[in-house]
Image (cartoon, rainbow, N blue to C red; front, side):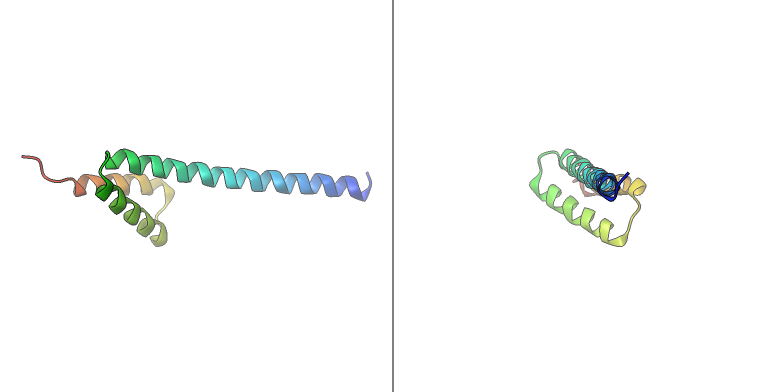
Length: 83
């Protein structure tokens, strides 16, 4: 194999890994947004509070496995008391 073939192979592998990383990040973002929309249930005020809480959790470095649980707890605690 010549240098050009090796360069093409290495470049292809690097681009494939980068594409996979970007795609996974996009899918995670879509999943988070879908959960927030579902928990908000059409309430724009609750949706805004959930977005703010989501950003706070991300800046605090909350693990991915706990993120959705904490968002659900926040939404449950934010619901008005029903009589």
